[in-house]
Image (tube, rainbow over all chains, first blue to last red; front, side, top):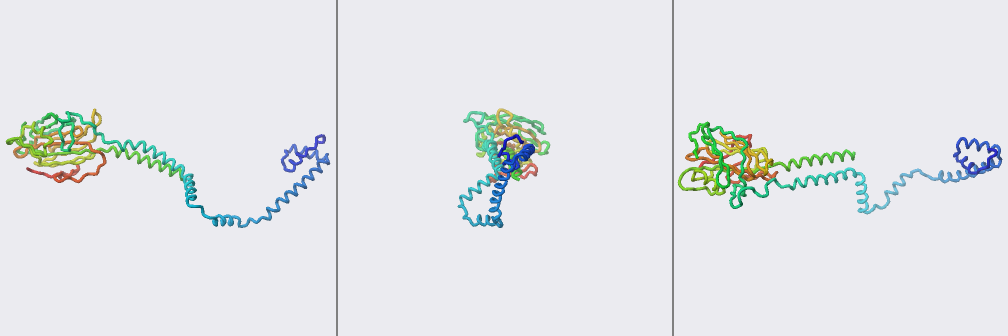
Length: 194
Length: 180
């Protein structure tokens, strides 16, 4: 480094420990051959030491004992914020803490409403208009309303001798007539023959 | 912790959501059974309580018709009602559910007139069928059975005066027995 130029920035970086090993060796070689740089480095060390000493003295003089207690006491003695402000803060904290729950609940409730409302509001599967004879010809049932009398017999097991299925009136009401209904029951009456 | 609560919440809502449609689809039918006494005796006379089916009754070879007993009850799908009638007989009507396979909805019923007749049939909503033949005194008994679909999940109503209580199919028949 004896042929190199003197560089003050290298000296500053050397003091701060920022030089690489290679740079530091070259600088040390240069310092052995350059009294100006050695003098400049000594001056920089002196200034740096004075600055460090001046900065550390106030920090050492500060008293941090009981710092936490004093902070807490100051917080406790401060005036309580108004109720609205406290509620707003509490609501915000609650929202943040329970965000996964209420977001899930709101979404689920929305989906459930979309699915369940049509199901719950759907009326019974009653035909809106009865099928059958014109209104004037439809019979009134014991239950009150006009009706369609269609009957489909899927299975019939009769233990008597004979039975007959027919319809009566213009309402096409199905009649199942059981002859000798009481034969096996041992009754005397045999029932009327139509 | 919060994640577990959220999962539990969602699971609960899903279970509740699955249960509600099942409840909503539960069906009930209003079953009406009337026991009619018919006899060939003099001029035509029909009990005013049978006015709604007088057209049907007039087509039968009898002249006098009297209502002996009746039962009206709301029956849930899978349940039945039973009514005893003169001669130590009984009729039971079970509601098997709604049959929506055809062009219109029909009520599937299981009907038994003990001890002789067992049948499965489907009737249009509000439709009826008449069953005749059992002898009684000098005449014949006719059973009028009608059924109408009811809105689901209604609590059972108190029976009107003169109307028999529905009988569970697992119980012995306790329907009232009335004679003219």
